[in-house]
Length: 387
Image (cartoon, rainbow, N blue to C red; front, side, top):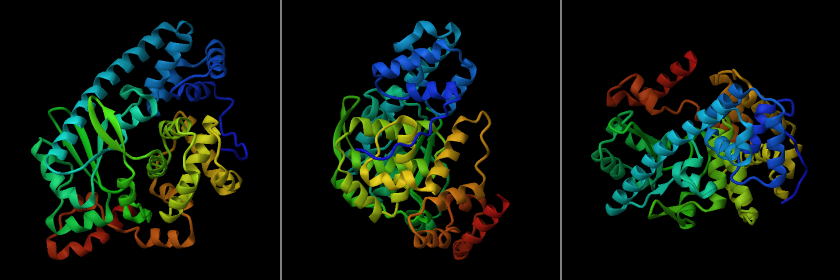
C-alpha cells in the first residue's frame, strides 16, 4: 500500500498521543521509545485514564504501558488500570462463554450464526478476548432465520428490549438491521443482526457473498465462522460511521486489521464497496486509520487524502476525540455527518426519502392499532422534530 501522507495526530496533546501509541496489538522499538519519552515528559494521568475509558482503550493502554514502561507510570494510576483490566477480563470471559453457548444452541437448531465484533473481533485483532472493551454480544444470522432465532434466544432467558407487533415484523426485517435482547440474571445485552445498517443508510450489503466467504476460527474451544478480512474491513467502517466515528477504539480496530492483513484484496474491497454504495464510508475509515495510526493508504484511496470534505470531517472527528467535553450528538449534526459520507447525489436522495422510516423506538413510543400502523412515519417525524 502507498499513497499521500496525511497527519491527523494532535501533536500538542500528549495524553492522546500516548493513547494512540498504545492502541495497537504489538509495539515496535520506535513506538516503544516514543511511549517512554511521553511517560517521562510529564502527563495528566487523570485525563489519560478518562480518555482511555471513554474511547474503549483502557485494556490496551494498561497492557502496553505495563509491558513497555510500567516502572515509569505512577503507582496509583498503574494499579487503577490493572484493576480495570482485570475486571474487564472477568466480564468478557463471562460474555465469551455465553456467546459460545448461544452459537452452539443456534447451530443445534439448524441456524448458522456468526459472532460479530465482541470476543471474536478481539481474537481476530489481538489474539486475546480481553484486549478489547465491550459490554454486549453481537450475533449475525441470515434474514430468513431471524424469527426462529428470536424464539430460541427468548427460551434462553433473554427478553426483547422492544416488543415487535406481528404486523410490523416484515417491516422490521426490511427497514432495520438488529433486534436487541437483555438477560437480567447475567446483565447481558445481546444484539441479533441480519444486516449492518438501517435501510435509510442505503447500503446494499451483499450478505450472501459475505456468508460464502466465512473463515473458521477457534473461540474458547469451539469452532466459529467469521467474516474474512476484506468483508470485516467494510463492516467495521460502516459500524464506525453509524456511530458518528465517536470512539478511537473503532479506528484502532481498522488500523490493527490492516496491520495484520497486509495482503488484502484491495481490488475486491474497492469494487464491492462501490456496489454496496459505501465507498466514501470506507475512504473515511481508512483516512482516519492512516492519519492517526500511520497505516499506509492503498493506492485506490489516494483521492480520499485529497478530498477537502473528507479531510475536514476527519479533522472535526479528531477534535471531538480529544475534547474533554465533546459536543452532544444532535440530530442535525448526525444528519450532516451521514450525508457527508454518501457516495452520490442519488444516495443522498435515497437517504432523505427514507429519513422517516419508522423504528422500534417509534413503535414503543406510541402503540398504534394494526390498521393504523401506516402512520408510524408521522410518529417518527414528531420525535425527530423534538430532537
